[in-house]
Length: 319
Image 1: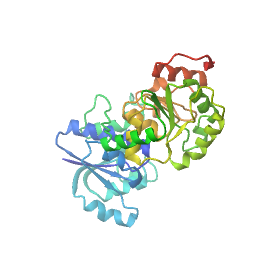
Image 2: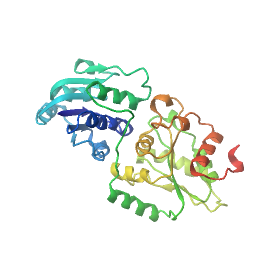
Image 3: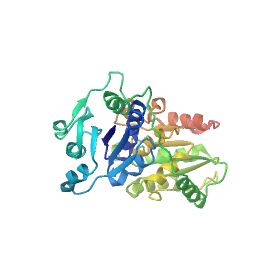
Image 4: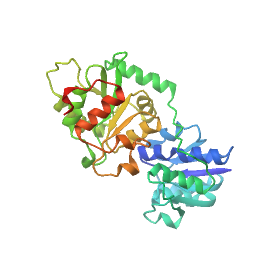
């Protein structure tokens, strides 16, 4: 049996969709799962052993029909994104059945049948898995099966050493950026967190070059002098490709960020997260399984959560 899954973008959303592949494999042992993805984010499904092939969608929509036809026949096509760009390739593929995520926009409902989520499925990951269940997938809980490449792990370990990470120090990764400025935690609070977690922690910031403005604001707020000998926050922005980013996050002891893709990768890897939510509903889109760390953005609460996660002695700056 063959399944074609269309989840093209973005980084965190693709990571959130991975349990669909695992559920299909559980329900249909021996089936083939082909994942259709944007080139920028294809590294995520390529690191999931339950996905047999990742097909990078051509940029030119005029080529989509031929590209989909060349993939052969599928019993089921699944649109997990609910947009025209994700549904149209499914419509071109030779699928006996076509289903989709229930939030359908831009006319995507013309090409797939929406699967309504179970009332108990609040988080988007569970709603994705409901789509897999509708076509025979099996999952008592969402399993991401995201596995970093050992060579990428070795590469990012070397990068961290070059940045001055000392052996034995816990690694905290943060992402000061977000798609919308209104989703960002204030830079002065990130800077304060760097100081208050103390010298036993290596604090590094990740993200793309688009997040550099936010990182510079953190560094400016961190300032100097440096009485605790902490060193400036480490700069990992733009230093990794997608697969290396997964490897980097797999090494962290804690990830702190707003509603952005890296938090979903951390959750998929089972790494502890603190989700800093301002506008979006954490019950729907928090790091999966970590709602208890995603409901407050008050500084004292964030610091306490971080200290508890890292088993650090609380500091007087928590107030």
